[in-house]
Image 1 (cartoon, rainbow, N blue to C red):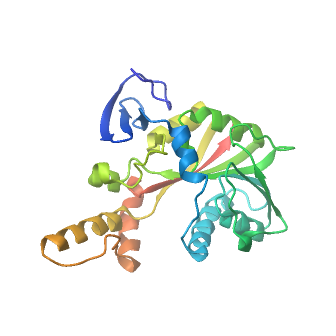
Image 2: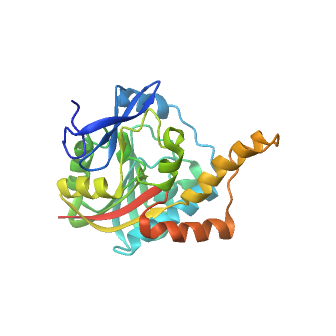
Image 3: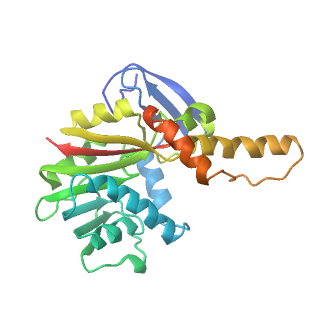
Length: 275
C-alpha cells in the first residue's frame, strides 16, 4: 500500500485512472496523490520548454489579487517566489515596495516584468537557500508538483524569517468543479503529484511547521461547470459552441460569493506563518 505523501496514512484508494497513472485518495486527510507516474520527469517535460500564451494583463490581474492576500499581513520587505513563471507576481510585488527574488528551474521571465528590485536565480526550490532569511515566500501553483512536499516546505521554512509568511495557491481538489466534472477536471494532469483540499492543506502545513492564518477558495467553479455543460448540451442539439465557453461578469461574481463559505472555488489560496 502506498503511503499518502501528505499525512503518511496507508488508508488510500484508487479514485481515478488515466493513461499516465492513477489518482489515489487518502481516507485520512482527504487529499489525493498521483501513483504510477514519474512526476519528476513529467514536470521537466512540461516546463523545460514552456511558453505561456496568456496575456500579461491577465497574469498581472491574478498577481494583484494574490498579493492583496499577502498584504493583509505584510506590506513591504524581502520576498522569494518559487516558480515565478514569466514574472508578473514579482513585478507587481516590486511595484508595491517589496525587494524580490525569483527562483525557478526553468526561468522564462518576460522582458516587460524586469524590475530594479527583482533578481532571478536558476535553481531547484528544494535546495535553494538565500544569502539571508526573507520576510515572505510565495509559491503559486508550485506545491502540487512535488510528490515529496515536505522537501519543498523545508526549503520554504529555512528561507523565512521567524514568523515570516508563506503565500500558497493550488488547485482545489475539494472544489465543486472536481466533484461534478470527475476525471474531466482540469487539475488532473501527469505533472500534478498532489491534490489538496482545505483539510489536507491544513494538515500538511501544520506538520511542516506553519500556522494557517488565512484560507479562501478563489475562482468560480460554477462558471467552469456551466462552461463544460453548455457546449455538451449544445452539441446534442446540433448547435456549435466553443469548448471553452464560460459565463462571466455578474453571474460569476454571484456564484463565487455563494461558493466561498464552502471552499468550493477551483483554487485554494492560503497564507501561512512560520512557527
